[in-house]
Image (tube, rainbow, N blue to C red):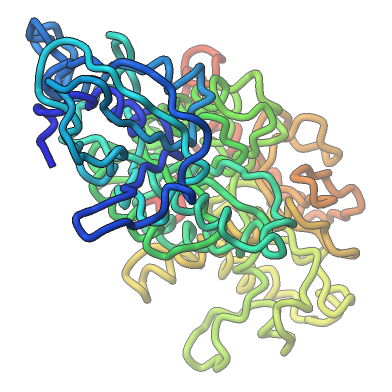
Amino acid sequence: MASPSHTLLLPVLVVLVLLEAHTEVGVATSDHGPIMSHDMLEAGPWNDAHATLYGGADGSQAKDTMSQGYGLMTAALSNVLFNDGAGCGSCFGIKCINAPQSCKPGQPSICHQPMPSQLIAEYKVGIVPVQYRRRRRCPERASKLNKLGWTPMERKWGQYRETAKSRLRSPPPPRLASQRRENASDEKTKSWKSLINIAVSGAAGMISNHLLFKLASGEVFGPEQPIALKLLGSERSFQALEGVAMELEDSLYPLLREVSIGIDPYEVFQDAEWALLIGAKPRGPGMERADLLDINGQIFAEQGKALNAVASRNVKVMVVGNPCNTNALICLKNAPDLPAKNFHALTRLDENRAKCQMMMNQKFTSILQLALKAGVFYDKVSKVTIWGNHSTTQVPDFLNAKINGISVKEVITDTKWLEEEFTESVQKRGGVLIQKWGRSSAASTAVSIVDAIRSLITPTPPGDWFSSGVYTDGNPYGIAEDIVFSMPCRSEGNGDYELVKEVIFDDYLWKRIKKTEAELLAEKRCVGHLTGEGNAFCDLPEDTMLPGEQ
């Protein structure tokens, strides 16, 4: 094997690696004899072509293109092999012919992608006649390189890719997964749906560390839904993001067809059909709530613009990063070409907390939940709504909730407990968890994201509904419009939802709904400069952020 600087055909071979996610090139022969017969690999006749030398990896021939700003990796594009994109996903055999002064006798005709190159001709300036032909399929002993993200093409010289990183990595999860599917039985894959793109921000964080493997396993979108994960991180988290991608690759999930990473939302959100926006800046010491609204608001404004520019026109957006209601509002305001109805703020964890049984033995905790109080499991609790903001002003609604189909107030006659202990326990659950665990919730948040997505892609069971922070325009309750407010929803399982109309209110419930509404309106005024409404004016009544945001 020769180094890249001694490779006549390096430009052609490199461009196949860099431009196409599904390229597989294998070695037909080796020092130990044939690996696969040509009959198994080759298809079509040999075609005549020429190759020329561009020197080293910088692509230079007679001049130093590095001094011209052409970057670390430069390769000429072979129009013959690329063929306006028709060559994507293909393998090609290439051999040197009819040039006794250049061709190396006994050299294999196929270049092995895991190595930088193979020397099939002498290192000379000029052109060398070659032949090429397309292969029927790629050998199993193909590249084991890893793709951990694409780098944008910023300049053009022929065609090339430039990266500021120390290396460009070519992409196998899609390639290896595609190879597995091609070799799998029709019975296993014939029912698979079309691939969907799922973008996740904050992908190197703890919540994502729990969530991504649920997505990849099929737990969320089902056992027949292949997915591509598009992971967004930051400069600071990029190395950790590489590790996350490696773990996903190593887990060999059949449904995970592609993993890509990046730090630019305009790249990562390309064609996204789901965007799970988890990443947000935590609240630091001495940071006022208004400061956090502004700092995170800028993040979500930029992500909203990116979604508006490059995501699927029907992308579903789940905002998790806090303060999630107002972040979702900022995001949708910066994505005017996308349906506002497609944006959600995650309040499902609050709903789950209201339903759940924290401990089997009450003596270990003073926190009593609906199911525990009534002596039944959480799946018998239905129609639980979280109204309003994801803060300590949130309103867990026991008035409309049912246990075993019976009104909660009939099952639990202790009204004082419902209005005081139950309500406060849900509102402050995050703080108690931090006291016990020493960190904010991550695993349960990931579970609630799964629940929230499943609620949108599976029909809502009869006699039930779910909570989600959604845009209030046109709501039937009289809640102020143009904010993101958690309300009861139902879905037919198509990713869309409708607000539930058959709810009742009493003075206790309505008074608390108006309090959380006032808080969200105040937050909206704080971020007016990010939603297109002019200057910001902050008059937040009190600091009601959940402890996980501290």
